[in-house]
Image 1 (cartoon, rainbow, N blue to C red):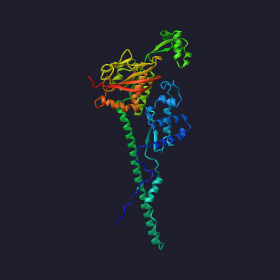
Image 2 (image 1 turned 120 degrees about the vertical axis):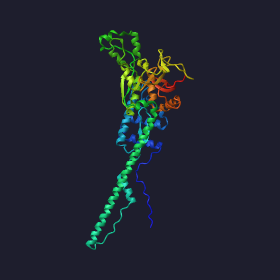
Image 3 (image 1 turned 45 degrees about the vertical axis):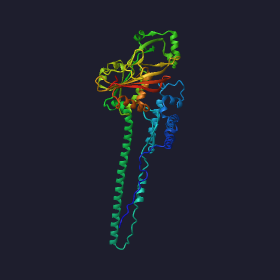
Image 4 (image 1 turned 90 degrees about the horizontal axis):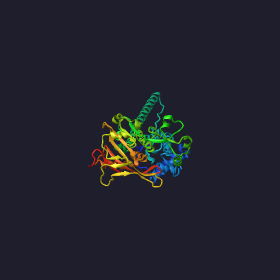
Length: 473
């Protein structure tokens, strides 16, 4: 007598492998989030999320930037300057928090999730294994495959037969309990395997994302010690105020009425008039840094924090030779405010001049010998800047120093954006490999051309990369 094997179908709700996410699935994921209690009563966050998702669905995600979002979502006018008004960055942080809270509870079982990666405003859609598996669904499916046997009633003829019937029933229930235990053990094993696959898929995705950053950030992401970030201290003249002590007042210089009126016409914040009782200027060298340097620090901090790394911050005037000897360093600002950089061991091929230009000491085919910024002839506003990304060994040659510096502060912000935004990294990695003849060089200089509008870097273009490990002759 032959027994035919019965094929057992998969219980309903078992997570399946991820497939490409269609636009319809993305739209449904968006609407679920919009209808949740976290977004239903937050119109600005709804507007923010819907805008960036629409750009993503239409294939225009790379166009998203702070200026565009500020105009479209927060109704800022032509004078809007993201460097002065952080409303977009604050709004993005709020949307990320709302999404996280939604997926912790209300959306915990959503298969398609919306994420906004740090350093970018373009959302990503991630498919997670289905969470709909329930014990009752599994139990029902197994009960259909293994129906409970119908007992054959034994006639109560005698006490002996009754005793035999009791033994049979007890044996039946013991076997049934043992079978259920085996099924539960199998389910637990299956759940364990499914969880391991889910964790493995998440680690694989994180590893792929990390690969994009490693050619540039490997030294910082793999170091056990915190990276030191150095903010520039440019010398700045400021107005005296009533709180200034007499030694500061003695060193100040007067401002004529004509000069004062001209200055006030340029100031958007007229409230400063209330604290200027004596129109004199004093020089400060330890109080300020550039807007571009501050924005760059924010981008670098987000990137390293996302990689599980911490960051220490110092003013450039307090950086010591000990810092440059024993730590990985990221400096924001040019040699005019980071004068210690001239002590580094590698001879650079791009240098800053006293004429506020970048000099190319080793011009290659198609390159200029000198690069300078451009200004609007009527307003005098900066419209085009150049920035250098310099990665060199430190004093001990055990660590690296990365300098992100524009001819102006806008260029510094652009250099930090170029190295932290995903839309630029793929191109830069390819050019690094080409510059290193097949392998990304460890030490190099990259020159960027930056279009500037209303004090905001807009279009960033890679001009050239020079490999400092094996410079061309």
